[in-house]
Amino acid sequence: MIKLIIFDFDGVLLNNYELHYNFSQNQITDITREEHRRLFDGNIHIEREKLAHRNTGFDLKKHFSDAKVNAVIETEIKKILKLLTKTYTIGIVTSAKEYGVKGCLQNNQLDSVFSFIYGYETALLKKDKFQKMYREFNVSPDECLFITDTLGDILEAHEVGIDTIAVDFGFHEKERLMRGNPLAIVSQFRDLPIAIEKINAKKISNIT
Image 1 (cartoon, one colour):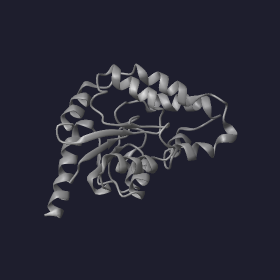
Image 2 (cartoon, helix red, strand yellow):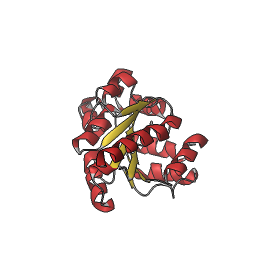
Image 3 (tube, helix red, strand yellow):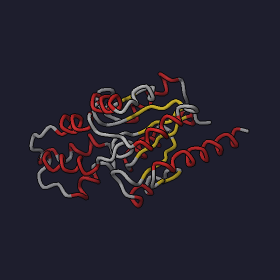
Image 4 (cartoon, one colour):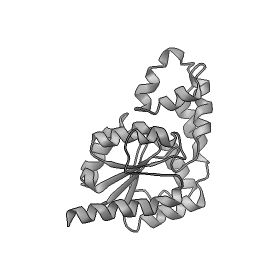
């Protein structure tokens, strides 16, 4: 059964794809929208290095983190997150800097909702952050579920045995997400609780 639900942050809890693309245009010379989306087909830090020869020196991580501190998370999302904490432990695994995420959560009165935030400072690879999570919360991969909006995240989670739900309202569109074979794809945040419940029920039935 599911004990721990992990959320990606950008594109899942916060609708900020266009902001990231705009900042990426400042950082990477002549980057197209498709090139930008391809950065998230794998681990963003590794994929971005492949375009290092076009880097302008613009500090995207800092500007993107600064911008999200005062961003507003939708009321409906806040309610759903608080509802989920009644049944599950929830945390965040992100490629972004932690101070931006923590600042945003504090300003949205959500800082007490999440049991952990593992970002850029914790590790570059998300699979390493998942391994840390296993150790610190004494959970197995089968007891975890990752909610994300990118193909690269799905693939990293699957590398360490974590099932995923994808959302297609973030950085990646449905067709691209399908390549990672998530257990479900949802188009609205409000549909997540039902999708989670169905997956958890199936896990429980498999145990019994």
